[in-house]
Image (cartoon, rainbow, N blue to C red; front, side, top):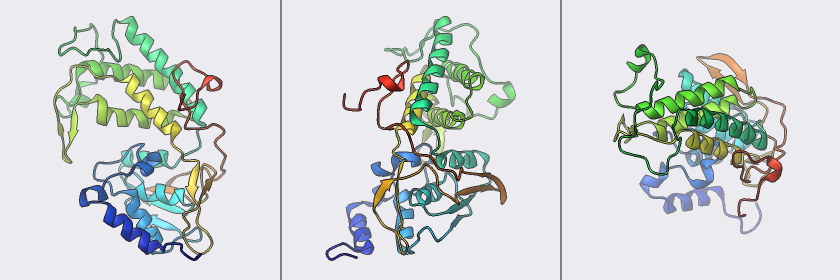
Length: 305
């Protein structure tokens, strides 16, 4: 360690002093890439994982096992540092979330371009029925459209009463059909995850406090716009940078990295399900650039433009 360089324990102590008890369990802004694609309300924060990685001096020659990995906080943080990690998760949805959050292979520009084409198709279907996805003024009681789509009665019985209003549900099912009809294997999981997050935290009437309940019932809510914004956040996540461990311990040095790392595997109920691609490829686009629906990657403007 060079003269004057702070020790890892000193850094942890300063971080702890800066954060209040409530902030200690919150997601820090610098941790939002990948971690914020979807996470349970009561998930422990990534900086807690970093603290243990530094405390135990973990690096690429180690392997981390998380037997109850949930939505993948530990596995994602290990991947950012190039540390092989294995997660076990029995919940099918949480398993899916972790599987997607550890897959950084989609090209950002192509992901956004494909999502934009789906958004336009879904929006056109709604407008043909006289429905706006994101009206400027959302009426308390919008006019009742004919033939609103809904779920089967058996499925509706599984939902909390009033957990989603009829019009947002109709919009969601229209978008879901477009996702299925125009699915691209390279992007579909990331696009489904963006829809799952939009449903839980924006489209539905669910309230997390941290108990799950039903909040104020919304007569209408944007669906396609919120979903596309979620896909954009995934594409713009600077996951192409990771903290690279050195041979003896964990370094805080950042460098451009490949989109995956060897050894990150995900198991479900102790049975191997999938292996995150060991063949890494560099992001070929700048994920921080903007891409609006209908604008090709070549026409994109820098974020500050």
